[in-house]
Image (spheres, helix red, strand yellow):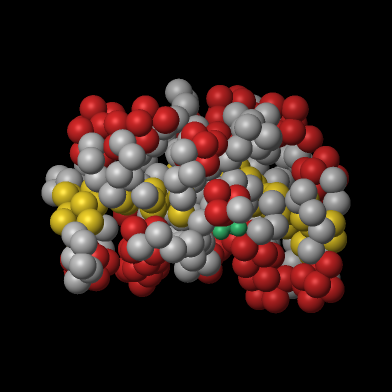
Length: 327
Ligand code: GLV
Ligand code: GLV
């Protein structure tokens, strides 16, 4: 059996690395727990047959060029793949794969955790109690807002958006509005959810959760105009990609208390935060941990490896995002 040369840009769960090593792979792995520089990736991919990358690596045409003709597959360890120039890969007939499915519920759980935490002031209350400021139960102490039976707006009702809608409708008897490029009639019936325009969703929802992928069309989908359509009592949650929201506009809108609050797991210029964001008290900011559970990250690793192995063997990988290359 031919040995394939593979470059892995950062450590992923060991079980996935072990699985990879069982397959006659000559693995070059970044042993340091940090994002590689572009130069390091350019050097790393040279002459490799396969690349496993992360959402923090920008994989552009230059990197594909540097890898050369030996490169047979780019397997990213994420569901989102806006960091990869898929058009350039498609031109080179190079399959790009992601890890959908296994992180759906895990990410939906985080979206809900953020929704509940911002609405019920969990982080604020924890800080307050730790700081020794809790002097006893108070009739007006840290009053949040109800969640059950309120209206949630799901922007982008794909796998993750649907899983959030299901939690909202079934677990919390919420009214669910959704906007999307297409209708999901089965799910509408199952969850009694309503398809509507983004404008209606923004105007009527008590909670808005973003679940669209980042593309040219969804960049700044939620800008100042859209933020100002929301009610002063609305909470915005984002677990998708930061740049879907105009983060600077969000800072202004939150500062002026035009909306009640925001809970964000992703940022426009990650890991940098928009100036002023971290100083606001009506937000919760987490560190892009949507899929960060031991179980899910392990599954994502196994799927990334399966995609890679299929690509190396010249087979159509299970999660190819540009299947048109095989037509
Ligand atoms: C995480 O953000 C992912 O796209 O997997
Ligand atoms: C991604 O997994 C999505 O479809 O929401």
